[in-house]
Image (cartoon, rainbow, N blue to C red; front, side, top):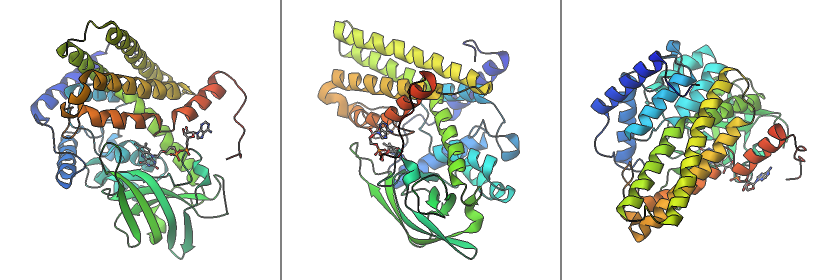
Length: 387
Ligand SMILES: Cc1cc2nc3c(=O)[nH]c(=O)nc-3n(C[C@H](O)[C@H](O)[C@H](O)COP(=O)(O)OP(=O)(O)OC[C@H]3O[C@@H](n4cnc5c(N)ncnc54)[C@H](O)[C@@H]3O)c2cc1C
């Protein structure tokens, strides 16, 4: 993608910015981790959907605008720069929705996609288990066939929005003993199904939107299997491909964070401190590097030749975000807890706790480095089967 916008991109950019100026809440919404805040964020998603801005990259036949990655990037940039509320249905819109379009049946698309687009149904993704994170194929949750249903038994952990979601995209073993990717199946489980117990986990930053889920003989209709039975690994690979792609949309968010740190340094009389300047200069270079890498990835993606570059972008994004947030927190000192960010409850101390997670979710940075080592540098493949 070019650094300068085409006429069509400029026009859309202007439309989005004007709409956000007119409609985005001027005050932060209540914390998404509260009942009130969750519903306020859902309502905001509905407002976006009514304006045709909830899923600009979704095909027109499913209610989107059918825009490719370039215009989606234009939207994400305008959105991040406007400071509008954080998006609630990230999993539904960016991961399970596109997976259903590619791997689901027509009936599933009709049944689920409208509710994702207008945020009537918030989705969560429950893949990780207590003993299976990076090594996901070792998972142990089982799904036994019983007529037209499957009976799920096992537990999942670290499910973002797991306590509040309406539907859970999950992966379970339908045949064989494992470990390994064979015999796995993807299910879209009604979050209120009998036998599904959801516990919130309080995190270092105080939020409880993480959950551990216990499937205690949860019955799921065979109609809620996404893709073929025993072919869940390839379905999940489709989903994780979308996950990596969605990370690179947030370069404007990183730039916004950088501008905030510069403002803090100025306010606190630290803008001429050589140590602060050194770290700011490093951050500026990394933010620009990330922006250019994101644009390059969009081009490579449109040519079908993305290989390890999304791993590079993920590492730069998460490590730059963490370094800048820590710098902001250090300059603020004890005042960090009182310094508000874009949303309610989004203060700098909380951010500094949360930002550590960027190196873990979406595939840990160590695993991304393995990918770069093998695919970009041609180093020997990692020995498998030891863990
Ligand atoms: C904020 C946040 C949100 C999350 N949301 C979700 C969610 O919604 N749904 C979901 O299913 N999961 C979610 N996760 C879980 C996340 O996907 C896992 O934490 C991640 O995959 C790592 O798995 P693990 O925690 O089991 O660590 P492990 O895989 O046990 O890794 C432990 C350490 O070993 C390293 N390591 C592991 N394997 C290798 C290797 N082959 N080579 C080198 N180093 C290695 C890791 O990098 C890590 O440092 C979330 C996590 C976080 C922090």
